[in-house]
Each structure stands twice: as structure tokens, then as C-alpha cells.
Figure: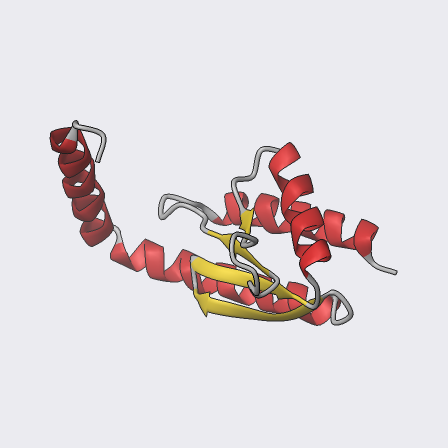
Length: 124
């Protein structure tokens, strides 16, 4: 859409080749991330309603939109690219998380660790 479709196409092809060559790692890290998010949801049942999605493509669903926005805003301040979905009049209170397929367990631990830290501060 930006007039440089050949760069987007090349990027896509490289990403798909990487994904095929590293599918075992991606599945393992995706399962690890999903388990980490499930533990987080269990730890904060008053704030987190549920976790939806599949492995690295997961959403954290909050009970209210204000909590979702606050959580995403603070995570963004720490450099984590997540977003609260607020662009529709009746959006669910969901925060989209998408760690990269190149993530390591250490990166996931850092990401989820910061989530845990922020949720601790939000807990009533």
C-alpha cells in the first residue's frame, strides 16, 4: 500500500523461509508463552478475565476497558509493543500481544515478567 510492494514481498518471503526452517522452535516458544500467560491469568483473576488466541498470537482479556488501556499504556512506556483494542464503540477489553517468532525463553520471561510487575501495581 505504500508503493514499495517489492520490499514487503521480500520481507514476507524471508519471514516465511525463517518460519519453515525454525518451526520446531516457534512451536516450543509459542507453547511456553501460552503457558506463561495462563499462569499470569491465574495469578490475577480479579483483573484478567481470560487469555484468548493461539500461542504467540494471544490476547489478554480484562474485565474492563480502563484496565486494558492502563496496562497497555504502561507496557508501551517500557518499550513493549502491545495494544488495547479501543477503536470500536463496543470493543472487548482485550490487549493484543504478539511476541516475534524469533523470541527466546529469556525474552518471553522478560515480557511476561514486566506484565506481572505492572499487574501487581494494578491489583486492588
